[in-house]
Image (cartoon, rainbow, N blue to C red; front, side, top):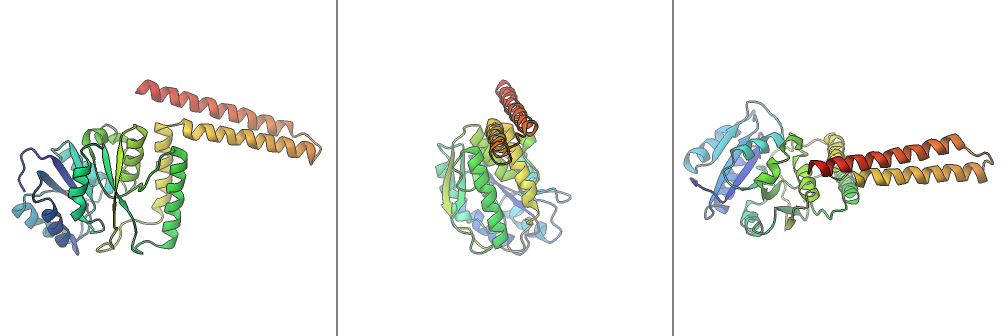
Length: 290
């Protein structure tokens, strides 16, 4: 597909997807055949025959294929695609067939008035373990509570967004699986319009590259992103929590133990004030930067 000035760039990060990449690419090319788009596939250091399978799409369909010499991570693959993209808007979609390429035209049409359109998954078809579902639910729930945003799908791997808005914060976007989650929070924190389109999430072809142990680093990264863009959302509740704890310690020590724990109470109150001031300073620095 040779488009001189594409209206959209479609970025497909892949890694060891030889079992299903052919069928996926056929569906993708069919879905965008009547659109002015360029297709960029980023092979993130695959060790199987993924690159061989992509050769025909590069030659016959005009798809751009970027090859990493070694596996650098999901986010790094998308970053390579962003640098190679010609269009002002980019659409990313995982190459493991979990997201339906047939929904791409719908996302493209909905993107006219939105800064980002996310394909929100309505079901997971039993492809995730119960432990992973619970942990992800806790993380997403915590993020919603801290950020105050109604997030239908935090880390969907199918979305369309403005390229310039993503490149603006490229330095803080991670190279791993947390790329999409962080990108969602960045857009929302910058008061950009994020829209959602419901889709069905399909069973993946091949083996999942995500590991349960990565949820810990994901949590820390999302917390860091929230502090970076809206520090008061973190520091003010923490300061109030310390004040409540100080009041509880004082009450229990006076009315139950009959011995006022003055040192502990004062330390908690002083810490609460320090945390609050730290939050104000962080918010001031953020506003000065903007």
